[in-house]
Length: 356
Ligand code: KG4
Ligand code: ZN
Image (cartoon, rainbow, N blue to C red):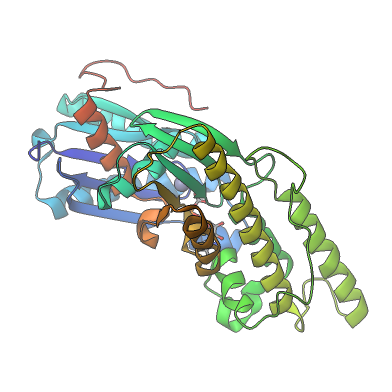
């Protein structure tokens, strides 16, 4: 019922997030502290730094979410917290904080699987019945799955090496895109999307990964290698230092983005055909959900929209703030689990969890 109030806490990577939500999915209060700026400066996430920043911010972030909601801890039905997967040091901060919190306020605890939360977020915003197909793409993850129920996922494919956001971030770093005035404050993926708008994607051709592989897995390391070799070659031709290429950067960005989009679209197309052949999706109004930080890329969205339209699926993509890590998605997963009565640890149970 709507009166069930859940506090959700997220610390699996580089965002400290918290939200208080009612049983209908309404966000009563939320707070988010992003470490992205710090990690951009160091050129990647240093786990001990991430942990320290979570430690410095979690108390304030949770308190802010509670204050904004006007809900007292005593009124909560449960606390839901990400326990896996993610950076072990980061996860530990959220888990330890939550353990103390539930002990002090004598509340049930709901351990949350981060990917389950990403996949279910769409149901906080739209009436999407199970089962649906979901593509999650971010800096840390890349997977295709059929969501069959709140805690019932059929994994169709995942990345064999790195995640697409990670690839885009590394290419952006290799091109020193942070030095471009228009890209100074952007993530690698955002910088590549911006520059690609002025680029000619046909000038350089990259091979779409795994053209011959008959599954729904992803691979981006080979693409990154192709892009790096092209950058090296172009730097040599132009006679410039490593990371100082100016001309052709937009064309390289456009070709990279196009290949990532094309790979994601082709694997998703395969997955849709597999689902249809095996009756894994409803005949009526089947849905494809696209989420994760990379899902905010408009070019990639359009590629997925083409696949969805060609196969008769409706494409749903949560707004950017719900695609990246956030407190509400964890609270929502808690709400869904409370409704189902699954995976809820009663007060007083010692919550120790081995992060995967
Ligand atoms: O979900 P998220 O905030 O954090 C995790 O990785 O879990 O996603 C961040 C990732 C970064 O790799 C970033 O480069 C990528 O999402 N990203 C984008 C865009 N915005 C963020 N990639 C492509 N196009 C974008 N517009
Ligand atoms: Zn995430």
